[in-house]
Length: 191
Image 1 (cartoon, helix red, strand yellow):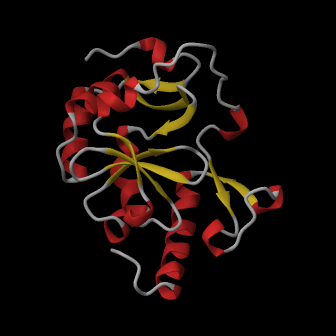
Image 2 (cartoon, one colour):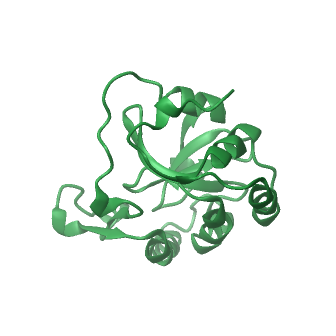
């Protein structure tokens, strides 16, 4: 299916990745990537904005392997590949069977994941709602809105003092720390 530029109207996006980079990334992440997803990375190598009514941040090809390592994805949700987030506490991932799922960063546990779409084309098709879309706020482009005291540990989702805007590189070690803490207090957590 060809990329519909209208889906990404109002997005902050990067120029497309080269085919050489995409071939290298597939090797770095250690799994084949859906051809539809690779086609999107060739069109835009990461970006963020509204896809339909949902906010979506897609990592660039260069970020995929390093961020998956930094977030400890194979420790917490083996076989998954983080490809982005909703910018507000949930990662967007490709499951081992290439379904698109959303899983909280804390706890990053498959028991808490939810299906976003059965495949990449369906994920994009869900964003084809008509109408105006707001542009991303420049202050938050490239940032995760992190709950300082995570909700699963009693944090208040409505308290602005409980929120911090962190780059993925700042966010990843915090997520790993909280996920280890979660495993300590919930020793029967699924792997």
